[in-house]
Length: 305
Image 1 (cartoon, helix red, strand yellow):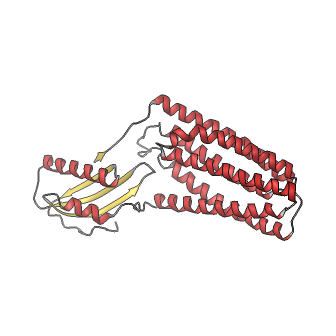
Image 2: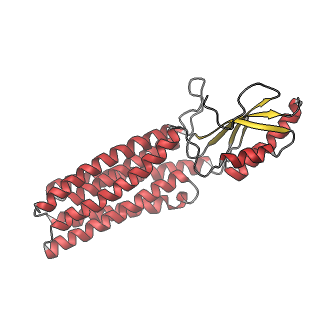
Image 3: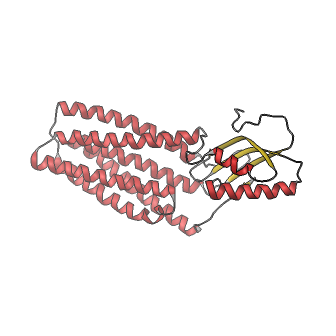
């Protein structure tokens, strides 16, 4: 079995990354609580839906922070993969909950459209400005790491869209204050709700694929099989399984049937070739190959074990 690991960040940089995430979490908790209280007092559904958006990002940031901490823990005999799947499981639960609450908010928005209510627009304006300022600061904190880390990039994009949602709520607050068009609150709630469902569905779909051990869509199994079969003295590649453990690790497991009874040292040489090829061409960084010679078993590429 061959593994490829890359260590591009120092311990101090990881600590700084964790600190920046923690600051962003605390800021977003403050925004969420302010917007929930403000939304109830002012009667603004748009403010409550923006609070939901912020709360979803609090969960996402906590997941990123927990992943940063758990990533330092070593695997054990009871947890051979460690906590590498915690982030995916949390993303699945987060996405499912987000979609349900967004639908409830949209139903309330339709009711509000049919019976518009007066809203305390001043409170909406000030709280949306608070959201823009706090999220803008969080975006600046995470911008550097977002360029080199997928987990941090996800948190960065969530906060950036939060800031945009707060801008939309601010525009709605100004329209309500100066033109008394209170129906705009329900319209904004619908727009934010649709956006949350779109984001939630995408996250739910991707996390489900990883949890179900589906082959990543960027990988074509037949291409890998053909490239391995081109190596002498490989006769056949079968029992292929490719799955994604988390966002950083893709595993390949396969049986290889050889034309002749080769030595173990020869197999090691071929295995090294396979590892290099699948890593550089397909991003697969964990390889587990079972060598066979003249064994009676199914030679199909995909076998339901």
